[in-house]
Length: 393
Ligand SMILES: Cc1ncc(COP(=O)(O)O)c(C=O)c1O
Image: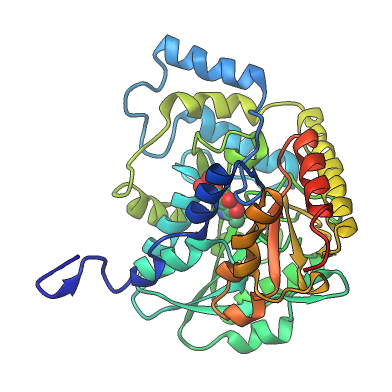
């Protein structure tokens, strides 16, 4: 339906009609399939943190509008976390902002920092909200494609350098990277930092999988020389504490950057998730053992699903981080991830997503399919067994 002869959805958003996740999740329900499509855990985070949320609700902490930048306890805990894990010192009052998940943080950063026509370099394939956020801000996305080789995905630094033009405003990074599971190395990050300084670019970095690294290490790009003052760092509680429904995220950065992002954020949600903010403040102060156990549990699940997929005949890109694994379906006799994923529930009762949805250059992602492994071990074992029964086409 349209009005005045125009489509209802504006031109900026026209290409973002419906997401593949909605279609695939509906398919999972109607076929009773195991849903390894969408990335949410099938068990909730720590009991004590849920109790902390209940206590906050009962005690009337956060039931009314919390302060615009976030409750002071949470801002202090975020600053404490950045210091504890990365040695990055942030002032909780001027350098920390609480958002409605990392998604709002990314959108607010783009809306705040871009003028229409500004170019944004992003690592392709990318999380779907990036393209929409850039479009909402009137920006122009410039994908730099991570290339699969030798069992993992790689950034070509020459391609990245070549993508910078006089219109480039910022680089939108994501490490650990969804969907490829790539964790950018110290050398890669140093080169990106050098480029950003040399060309006077801002960097917005989405680090929601910061604690889910199995090989290598996560280093925030803000740690590199010259980067603290030009980097908007983003993370959230969803992945680290297995509460994706709470939508508590945050931004850290130099005061001018945080102020700019807050200017956009205040007209999106203003504030959100009051009681959950108090609970996440406690979560961020959990002992190291919590973070280690989370990582080790997911490492085991990664290995379980990677083995299952390999035995089923997929070519598997073993992820160094995140809770996603990318596979190549060509050894199974297919080359179209969309057709493969649409048929998979009927064929064996498992749902996955075609990686092509994360690309501008769709052809680059055509034969790849993403599975999530943030599920109970019994679910992953059952999915593996079903996939093994698949056999060649
Ligand atoms: C790279 C990336 N960023 C952000 C998000 C969403 O974070 P939040 O739920 O905190 O908005 C996701 C969720 O899948 C993600 O994969």
